Length: 462
Image 1 (cartoon, rainbow, N blue to C red):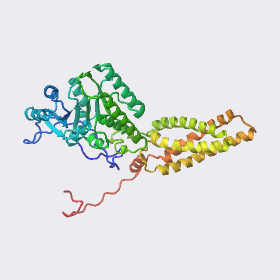
Image 2: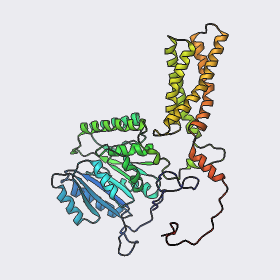
Image 3: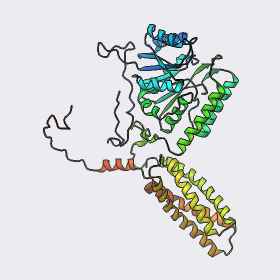
Image 4: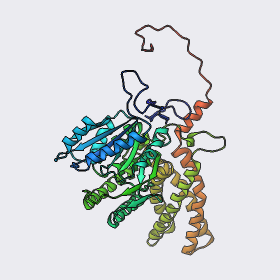
Protein backbone atom coordinates (compact mmCIF):
# COMPACT_ATOMS: atom_id res chain seq x y z
CA UNK A 1 0.00 0.00 0.00
CA UNK A 2 1.63 3.32 -1.03
CA UNK A 3 2.56 5.67 1.74
CA UNK A 4 4.38 8.58 0.13
CA UNK A 5 2.88 11.71 -1.39
CA UNK A 6 1.26 11.28 -4.75
CA UNK A 7 1.87 13.60 -7.71
CA UNK A 8 -0.56 16.28 -8.63
CA UNK A 9 -2.75 16.30 -11.76
CA UNK A 10 0.15 17.32 -13.96
CA UNK A 11 2.40 14.52 -12.78
CA UNK A 12 4.67 16.89 -10.85
CA UNK A 13 5.12 16.50 -7.11
CA UNK A 14 2.45 18.31 -5.11
CA UNK A 15 3.49 21.38 -3.14
CA UNK A 16 1.57 20.38 0.01
CA UNK A 17 1.43 17.15 1.97
CA UNK A 18 -1.09 14.85 0.31
CA UNK A 19 -2.45 11.46 1.13
CA UNK A 20 -1.42 8.57 -1.10
CA UNK A 21 -3.46 7.53 -4.09
CA UNK A 22 -6.33 5.21 -3.22
CA UNK A 23 -5.45 1.60 -3.91
CA UNK A 24 -7.20 -1.74 -3.43
CA UNK A 25 -5.55 -3.61 -0.59
CA UNK A 26 -3.76 -6.74 -1.82
CA UNK A 27 -5.51 -10.07 -1.45
CA UNK A 28 -4.33 -11.79 1.69
CA UNK A 29 -4.75 -15.17 3.30
CA UNK A 30 -7.17 -14.65 6.22
CA UNK A 31 -4.82 -16.66 8.46
CA UNK A 32 -1.91 -14.34 7.79
CA UNK A 33 0.13 -16.53 5.42
CA UNK A 34 1.78 -15.08 2.36
CA UNK A 35 4.37 -12.80 4.00
CA UNK A 36 7.85 -13.68 5.23
CA UNK A 37 7.86 -17.21 6.61
CA UNK A 38 8.44 -16.29 10.27
CA UNK A 39 6.52 -12.99 10.24
CA UNK A 40 2.72 -13.14 10.40
CA UNK A 41 1.08 -10.57 8.17
CA UNK A 42 -0.41 -7.49 9.83
CA UNK A 43 -4.21 -7.48 10.09
CA UNK A 44 -6.15 -5.68 7.40
CA UNK A 45 -8.88 -4.63 9.84
CA UNK A 46 -8.47 -3.42 13.43
CA UNK A 47 -11.83 -3.14 15.25
CA UNK A 48 -11.75 -1.12 18.44
CA UNK A 49 -14.33 -1.67 21.17
CA UNK A 50 -14.12 1.28 23.61
CA UNK A 51 -15.35 0.31 27.07
CA UNK A 52 -15.83 1.84 30.48
CA UNK A 53 -17.13 -0.41 33.26
CA UNK A 54 -18.55 -3.03 30.88
CA UNK A 55 -17.77 -6.19 32.87
CA UNK A 56 -21.16 -7.70 32.01
CA UNK A 57 -21.35 -7.13 28.23
CA UNK A 58 -17.67 -7.40 27.32
CA UNK A 59 -17.07 -11.22 27.29
CA UNK A 60 -20.14 -12.29 25.25
CA UNK A 61 -19.78 -9.38 22.83
CA UNK A 62 -16.09 -10.02 22.09
CA UNK A 63 -16.66 -13.75 21.61
CA UNK A 64 -19.66 -13.13 19.37
CA UNK A 65 -17.75 -10.62 17.23
CA UNK A 66 -14.71 -12.91 17.03
CA UNK A 67 -16.87 -15.83 15.93
CA UNK A 68 -18.58 -13.72 13.26
CA UNK A 69 -15.30 -12.42 11.83
CA UNK A 70 -13.73 -15.88 11.84
CA UNK A 71 -16.62 -17.29 9.83
CA UNK A 72 -17.28 -14.41 7.39
CA UNK A 73 -14.38 -11.98 7.07
CA UNK A 74 -11.98 -12.79 4.19
CA UNK A 75 -9.00 -10.86 5.60
CA UNK A 76 -7.01 -11.11 8.77
CA UNK A 77 -8.44 -9.02 11.60
CA UNK A 78 -7.74 -7.82 15.12
CA UNK A 79 -10.18 -6.91 17.91
CA UNK A 80 -8.80 -4.30 20.30
CA UNK A 81 -10.48 -3.70 23.65
CA UNK A 82 -9.81 -0.06 24.57
CA UNK A 83 -10.49 0.27 28.28
CA UNK A 84 -10.72 3.93 29.27
CA UNK A 85 -10.38 4.13 33.05
CA UNK A 86 -12.76 1.35 34.09
CA UNK A 87 -13.09 0.91 37.86
CA UNK A 88 -14.86 -2.47 37.95
CA UNK A 89 -13.50 -5.86 36.83
CA UNK A 90 -13.35 -4.83 33.16
CA UNK A 91 -9.50 -4.63 33.16
CA UNK A 92 -9.17 -8.21 34.42
CA UNK A 93 -11.80 -9.49 31.99
CA UNK A 94 -10.26 -7.62 29.04
CA UNK A 95 -6.78 -8.93 29.79
CA UNK A 96 -8.18 -12.47 30.11
CA UNK A 97 -9.91 -12.26 26.75
CA UNK A 98 -6.70 -11.02 25.13
CA UNK A 99 -4.80 -13.94 26.64
CA UNK A 100 -7.23 -16.70 25.62
CA UNK A 101 -8.99 -15.52 22.43
CA UNK A 102 -6.85 -15.34 19.25
CA UNK A 103 -6.53 -11.95 17.52
CA UNK A 104 -7.84 -10.05 20.57
CA UNK A 105 -5.72 -7.42 22.32
CA UNK A 106 -6.33 -5.26 25.37
CA UNK A 107 -5.24 -1.62 25.86
CA UNK A 108 -5.67 0.24 29.15
CA UNK A 109 -6.03 4.05 29.33
CA UNK A 110 -6.06 5.88 32.65
CA UNK A 111 -8.33 8.68 31.40
CA UNK A 112 -11.96 8.49 30.35
CA UNK A 113 -13.24 9.45 26.91
CA UNK A 114 -14.36 7.40 23.93
CA UNK A 115 -12.64 9.77 21.53
CA UNK A 116 -9.39 9.55 23.48
CA UNK A 117 -9.53 5.75 23.37
CA UNK A 118 -10.18 5.67 19.62
CA UNK A 119 -7.44 8.20 18.83
CA UNK A 120 -4.88 6.29 20.96
CA UNK A 121 -5.54 2.87 19.46
CA UNK A 122 -6.04 4.03 15.88
CA UNK A 123 -2.85 6.11 15.94
CA UNK A 124 -0.78 3.11 17.06
CA UNK A 125 -2.41 0.49 14.85
CA UNK A 126 -0.56 -1.12 11.95
CA UNK A 127 -3.78 -2.13 10.15
CA UNK A 128 -4.68 -0.24 6.94
CA UNK A 129 -8.40 -0.19 7.83
CA UNK A 130 -9.61 0.97 11.26
CA UNK A 131 -13.08 0.59 12.72
CA UNK A 132 -14.99 0.76 15.97
CA UNK A 133 -18.30 -0.45 17.34
CA UNK A 134 -20.10 -0.12 20.64
CA UNK A 135 -19.70 -2.97 23.10
CA UNK A 136 -23.42 -3.77 23.14
CA UNK A 137 -23.24 -4.78 19.44
CA UNK A 138 -26.58 -3.12 18.76
CA UNK A 139 -25.76 -3.13 15.04
CA UNK A 140 -26.31 -6.34 13.09
CA UNK A 141 -22.83 -7.67 12.36
CA UNK A 142 -23.80 -8.57 8.79
CA UNK A 143 -23.28 -4.87 8.01
CA UNK A 144 -19.58 -5.04 8.93
CA UNK A 145 -18.27 -6.35 5.61
CA UNK A 146 -20.34 -3.82 3.56
CA UNK A 147 -18.98 -1.13 5.90
CA UNK A 148 -15.29 -1.82 5.30
CA UNK A 149 -15.44 -3.12 1.70
CA UNK A 150 -15.36 0.38 0.10
CA UNK A 151 -12.30 1.20 2.22
CA UNK A 152 -10.49 -2.00 1.27
CA UNK A 153 -11.25 -1.42 -2.41
CA UNK A 154 -10.01 2.19 -2.26
CA UNK A 155 -13.38 3.64 -3.30
CA UNK A 156 -14.05 5.56 -0.07
CA UNK A 157 -12.13 7.19 2.76
CA UNK A 158 -14.55 6.77 5.66
CA UNK A 159 -17.65 4.62 6.17
CA UNK A 160 -20.48 4.94 8.68
CA UNK A 161 -23.48 2.91 9.66
CA UNK A 162 -26.75 4.84 9.44
CA UNK A 163 -29.87 4.16 11.47
CA UNK A 164 -31.66 7.01 9.70
CA UNK A 165 -31.23 5.79 6.11
CA UNK A 166 -34.40 4.68 4.32
CA UNK A 167 -33.35 1.04 4.19
CA UNK A 168 -32.33 0.88 7.87
CA UNK A 169 -34.40 -1.22 10.25
CA UNK A 170 -34.32 0.15 13.78
CA UNK A 171 -35.94 -0.81 17.06
CA UNK A 172 -35.62 1.82 19.79
CA UNK A 173 -37.67 4.07 22.02
CA UNK A 174 -39.28 7.35 20.88
CA UNK A 175 -37.05 9.50 23.14
CA UNK A 176 -33.81 8.28 21.62
CA UNK A 177 -35.30 8.46 18.13
CA UNK A 178 -36.31 12.09 18.68
CA UNK A 179 -32.93 13.06 20.16
CA UNK A 180 -31.02 11.39 17.31
CA UNK A 181 -33.05 12.99 14.53
CA UNK A 182 -33.01 16.40 16.22
CA UNK A 183 -29.24 16.26 16.61
CA UNK A 184 -28.72 15.42 12.95
CA UNK A 185 -31.05 18.27 11.95
CA UNK A 186 -28.85 20.60 14.03
CA UNK A 187 -25.76 19.32 12.22
CA UNK A 188 -27.38 19.83 8.82
CA UNK A 189 -28.53 23.33 9.65
CA UNK A 190 -25.42 24.61 11.42
CA UNK A 191 -22.48 22.68 9.92
CA UNK A 192 -24.10 21.72 6.58
CA UNK A 193 -23.53 18.01 7.28
CA UNK A 194 -24.53 15.77 4.39
CA UNK A 195 -24.21 12.45 6.23
CA UNK A 196 -27.39 11.14 7.81
CA UNK A 197 -26.32 9.67 11.17
CA UNK A 198 -23.42 11.08 13.13
CA UNK A 199 -23.93 9.18 16.39
CA UNK A 200 -24.20 5.57 15.23
CA UNK A 201 -21.48 3.57 16.99
CA UNK A 202 -20.42 1.77 13.84
CA UNK A 203 -17.74 3.53 11.79
CA UNK A 204 -14.52 2.82 9.87
CA UNK A 205 -11.80 4.74 8.04
CA UNK A 206 -8.57 4.08 6.21
CA UNK A 207 -5.40 4.38 8.27
CA UNK A 208 -3.74 6.76 5.80
CA UNK A 209 -6.72 9.07 6.16
CA UNK A 210 -6.63 8.74 9.95
CA UNK A 211 -2.99 9.86 10.09
CA UNK A 212 -3.89 13.18 8.45
CA UNK A 213 -7.37 13.69 9.90
CA UNK A 214 -7.10 12.69 13.58
CA UNK A 215 -4.60 15.44 14.56
CA UNK A 216 -7.26 17.99 13.54
CA UNK A 217 -9.93 16.51 15.85
CA UNK A 218 -9.94 18.11 19.31
CA UNK A 219 -12.76 16.35 21.14
CA UNK A 220 -11.94 13.34 23.33
CA UNK A 221 -15.48 12.31 24.24
CA UNK A 222 -18.73 11.47 22.46
CA UNK A 223 -18.44 14.34 19.96
CA UNK A 224 -15.18 12.89 18.59
CA UNK A 225 -16.61 11.00 15.63
CA UNK A 226 -19.07 13.79 14.74
CA UNK A 227 -16.18 16.25 14.56
CA UNK A 228 -14.16 13.77 12.51
CA UNK A 229 -16.99 13.37 10.01
CA UNK A 230 -17.60 17.12 9.67
CA UNK A 231 -13.91 17.82 9.02
CA UNK A 232 -13.70 14.90 6.58
CA UNK A 233 -16.68 16.21 4.63
CA UNK A 234 -15.31 19.75 4.52
CA UNK A 235 -11.96 18.43 3.33
CA UNK A 236 -13.61 16.66 0.40
CA UNK A 237 -13.13 13.10 1.62
CA UNK A 238 -15.60 10.47 0.45
CA UNK A 239 -17.93 9.13 3.16
CA UNK A 240 -19.78 5.89 2.46
CA UNK A 241 -23.04 5.16 4.34
CA UNK A 242 -24.41 1.71 5.08
CA UNK A 243 -28.02 1.30 6.27
CA UNK A 244 -27.98 -0.92 9.34
CA UNK A 245 -30.30 -3.06 11.41
CA UNK A 246 -30.22 -1.69 14.94
CA UNK A 247 -31.76 -2.85 18.21
CA UNK A 248 -31.34 -0.32 21.00
CA UNK A 249 -29.81 -1.42 24.29
CA UNK A 250 -32.34 -0.53 27.03
CA UNK A 251 -29.60 -0.74 29.68
CA UNK A 252 -27.31 1.78 27.99
CA UNK A 253 -25.45 3.99 30.48
CA UNK A 254 -25.14 6.96 28.11
CA UNK A 255 -26.45 10.16 29.75
CA UNK A 256 -28.55 11.68 26.99
CA UNK A 257 -28.87 15.23 28.40
CA UNK A 258 -25.19 15.61 29.28
CA UNK A 259 -24.08 14.11 25.97
CA UNK A 260 -26.42 16.40 24.02
CA UNK A 261 -25.09 19.45 25.87
CA UNK A 262 -21.48 18.49 25.18
CA UNK A 263 -22.34 17.84 21.53
CA UNK A 264 -23.92 21.28 21.14
CA UNK A 265 -20.78 22.87 22.60
CA UNK A 266 -18.76 20.91 20.08
CA UNK A 267 -21.02 22.06 17.22
CA UNK A 268 -20.46 25.69 18.27
CA UNK A 269 -16.67 25.24 18.55
CA UNK A 270 -16.29 23.50 15.18
CA UNK A 271 -18.68 25.91 13.45
CA UNK A 272 -16.73 28.90 14.72
CA UNK A 273 -13.40 27.37 13.66
CA UNK A 274 -14.74 26.65 10.17
CA UNK A 275 -16.21 30.15 9.86
CA UNK A 276 -12.89 31.88 10.56
CA UNK A 277 -10.79 29.38 8.59
CA UNK A 278 -8.83 28.27 11.66
CA UNK A 279 -8.56 24.64 10.54
CA UNK A 280 -5.86 23.67 7.98
CA UNK A 281 -8.25 21.61 5.85
CA UNK A 282 -6.49 22.72 2.67
CA UNK A 283 -3.87 20.01 3.26
CA UNK A 284 -6.65 17.46 2.81
CA UNK A 285 -8.27 19.21 -0.16
CA UNK A 286 -8.03 17.05 -3.29
CA UNK A 287 -6.49 14.55 -0.86
CA UNK A 288 -5.42 11.77 -3.19
CA UNK A 289 -4.47 13.57 -6.39
CA UNK A 290 -6.85 11.42 -8.43
CA UNK A 291 -9.96 13.60 -8.40
CA UNK A 292 -11.48 13.67 -11.92
CA UNK A 293 -12.42 17.34 -11.36
CA UNK A 294 -8.68 18.10 -11.49
CA UNK A 295 -8.29 16.75 -15.01
CA UNK A 296 -7.74 19.18 -17.85
CA UNK A 297 -10.44 18.89 -20.52
CA UNK A 298 -10.29 20.97 -23.72
CA UNK A 299 -12.83 23.78 -23.63
CA UNK A 300 -13.99 23.03 -20.07
CA UNK A 301 -12.67 25.53 -17.51
CA UNK A 302 -12.05 23.65 -14.28
CA UNK A 303 -14.48 24.42 -11.47
CA UNK A 304 -16.35 27.06 -13.49
CA UNK A 305 -19.84 25.65 -12.93
CA UNK A 306 -19.41 25.39 -9.17
CA UNK A 307 -17.90 28.86 -8.96
CA UNK A 308 -20.75 30.35 -10.99
CA UNK A 309 -23.33 28.84 -8.67
CA UNK A 310 -21.51 30.12 -5.60
CA UNK A 311 -20.95 33.55 -7.13
CA UNK A 312 -24.63 33.88 -8.11
CA UNK A 313 -25.77 32.93 -4.61
CA UNK A 314 -23.38 35.42 -3.03
CA UNK A 315 -24.38 38.02 -5.63
CA UNK A 316 -28.10 37.75 -4.83
CA UNK A 317 -27.46 38.16 -1.12
CA UNK A 318 -25.01 40.96 -1.76
CA UNK A 319 -27.52 42.85 -3.91
CA UNK A 320 -30.21 42.56 -1.24
CA UNK A 321 -27.72 43.67 1.41
CA UNK A 322 -26.66 46.63 -0.75
CA UNK A 323 -30.24 47.72 -1.38
CA UNK A 324 -31.07 47.44 2.31
CA UNK A 325 -28.07 49.56 3.26
CA UNK A 326 -28.84 52.07 0.51
CA UNK A 327 -32.43 52.49 1.70
CA UNK A 328 -31.19 53.07 5.25
CA UNK A 329 -28.51 55.60 4.26
CA UNK A 330 -30.86 57.37 1.86
CA UNK A 331 -33.04 58.55 4.74
CA UNK A 332 -30.39 61.03 5.91
CA UNK A 333 -28.07 61.60 2.93
CA UNK A 334 -28.02 62.01 -0.83
CA UNK A 335 -28.22 59.21 -3.35
CA UNK A 336 -24.52 59.26 -4.30
CA UNK A 337 -23.26 59.17 -0.69
CA UNK A 338 -25.82 56.49 0.24
CA UNK A 339 -24.77 54.35 -2.73
CA UNK A 340 -21.05 54.75 -1.97
CA UNK A 341 -21.46 53.78 1.69
CA UNK A 342 -23.73 50.84 0.94
CA UNK A 343 -21.46 49.57 -1.82
CA UNK A 344 -18.34 49.85 0.34
CA UNK A 345 -19.79 47.81 3.20
CA UNK A 346 -21.34 45.22 0.90
CA UNK A 347 -18.06 44.95 -1.05
CA UNK A 348 -16.11 43.94 2.06
CA UNK A 349 -18.72 41.34 2.97
CA UNK A 350 -18.97 40.10 -0.63
CA UNK A 351 -15.21 39.67 -1.01
CA UNK A 352 -15.05 37.65 2.21
CA UNK A 353 -18.01 35.49 1.14
CA UNK A 354 -16.65 34.86 -2.37
CA UNK A 355 -13.21 34.11 -0.95
CA UNK A 356 -14.57 31.35 1.26
CA UNK A 357 -17.64 30.02 -0.55
CA UNK A 358 -17.07 30.62 -4.26
CA UNK A 359 -13.33 30.12 -4.66
CA UNK A 360 -12.70 27.88 -1.63
CA UNK A 361 -9.87 29.92 -0.10
CA UNK A 362 -9.47 28.90 3.56
CA UNK A 363 -7.32 30.36 6.28
CA UNK A 364 -6.14 33.92 6.81
CA UNK A 365 -3.21 33.91 4.39
CA UNK A 366 -3.37 36.85 1.92
CA UNK A 367 -6.76 37.91 3.36
CA UNK A 368 -5.73 41.58 3.53
CA UNK A 369 -4.43 41.52 -0.05
CA UNK A 370 -7.65 39.91 -1.25
CA UNK A 371 -9.70 42.62 0.46
CA UNK A 372 -7.53 45.34 -1.13
CA UNK A 373 -8.01 43.81 -4.56
CA UNK A 374 -11.70 43.45 -3.81
CA UNK A 375 -11.88 47.17 -3.06
CA UNK A 376 -10.45 47.92 -6.49
CA UNK A 377 -13.16 45.74 -7.98
CA UNK A 378 -15.58 47.70 -5.80
CA UNK A 379 -14.32 50.93 -7.36
CA UNK A 380 -15.35 49.65 -10.79
CA UNK A 381 -18.79 48.77 -9.47
CA UNK A 382 -19.03 52.19 -7.84
CA UNK A 383 -18.20 53.90 -11.11
CA UNK A 384 -20.88 51.94 -12.96
CA UNK A 385 -23.61 52.42 -10.36
CA UNK A 386 -22.75 56.05 -9.63
CA UNK A 387 -22.67 56.80 -13.35
CA UNK A 388 -26.10 55.20 -13.72
CA UNK A 389 -27.51 57.31 -10.88
CA UNK A 390 -25.95 60.45 -12.35
CA UNK A 391 -27.55 59.67 -15.70
CA UNK A 392 -30.91 59.18 -13.98
CA UNK A 393 -30.56 62.50 -12.14
CA UNK A 394 -29.69 64.26 -15.38
CA UNK A 395 -32.75 62.79 -17.10
CA UNK A 396 -35.17 63.40 -14.21
CA UNK A 397 -34.74 66.14 -11.65
CA UNK A 398 -36.50 64.30 -8.83
CA UNK A 399 -36.51 60.57 -9.67
CA UNK A 400 -38.73 58.28 -7.62
CA UNK A 401 -37.09 56.00 -5.09
CA UNK A 402 -38.36 52.95 -6.99
CA UNK A 403 -36.69 54.27 -10.17
CA UNK A 404 -33.39 54.67 -8.31
CA UNK A 405 -33.61 51.09 -7.05
CA UNK A 406 -34.40 49.80 -10.55
CA UNK A 407 -31.39 51.62 -11.98
CA UNK A 408 -29.16 50.26 -9.23
CA UNK A 409 -30.33 46.71 -9.92
CA UNK A 410 -29.54 47.07 -13.62
CA UNK A 411 -26.14 48.63 -12.93
CA UNK A 412 -25.29 45.91 -10.41
CA UNK A 413 -26.18 43.21 -12.91
CA UNK A 414 -23.95 44.86 -15.51
CA UNK A 415 -21.07 45.07 -13.03
CA UNK A 416 -21.55 41.49 -11.83
CA UNK A 417 -20.16 39.85 -14.97
CA UNK A 418 -17.04 42.00 -14.91
CA UNK A 419 -16.67 41.45 -11.16
CA UNK A 420 -16.75 37.67 -11.55
CA UNK A 421 -14.14 37.72 -14.29
CA UNK A 422 -11.84 39.92 -12.20
CA UNK A 423 -12.27 37.80 -9.09
CA UNK A 424 -11.63 34.56 -10.98
CA UNK A 425 -8.65 35.71 -13.01
CA UNK A 426 -7.03 38.31 -10.75
CA UNK A 427 -8.09 38.20 -7.09
CA UNK A 428 -8.48 34.42 -6.64
CA UNK A 429 -6.66 32.77 -9.55
CA UNK A 430 -6.31 29.00 -9.48
CA UNK A 431 -2.52 28.89 -9.22
CA UNK A 432 -2.46 25.10 -9.09
CA UNK A 433 -4.06 24.83 -12.52
CA UNK A 434 -1.95 27.63 -13.91
CA UNK A 435 1.20 25.87 -12.71
CA UNK A 436 -0.01 22.59 -14.19
CA UNK A 437 -0.71 24.21 -17.56
CA UNK A 438 2.70 25.88 -17.51
CA UNK A 439 4.39 22.55 -16.86
CA UNK A 440 2.42 20.95 -19.67
CA UNK A 441 3.38 23.65 -22.18
CA UNK A 442 7.03 24.03 -21.19
CA UNK A 443 9.48 22.19 -23.46
CA UNK A 444 11.19 19.28 -21.76
CA UNK A 445 14.49 20.11 -20.18
CA UNK A 446 17.54 18.36 -21.64
CA UNK A 447 18.72 15.48 -19.54
CA UNK A 448 21.76 16.21 -17.44
CA UNK A 449 24.84 14.14 -18.32
CA UNK A 450 25.43 11.31 -15.97
CA UNK A 451 28.52 11.58 -13.80
CA UNK A 452 29.89 8.92 -11.58
CA UNK A 453 29.12 9.69 -7.97
CA UNK A 454 31.25 9.06 -4.97
CA UNK A 455 29.96 7.27 -1.89
CA UNK A 456 29.80 10.64 -0.12
CA UNK A 457 27.85 12.39 -2.88
CA UNK A 458 24.36 13.23 -1.54
CA UNK A 459 22.88 12.10 -4.87
CA UNK A 460 24.20 8.59 -4.38
CA UNK A 461 21.36 6.17 -3.62
CA UNK A 462 21.64 4.57 -0.23
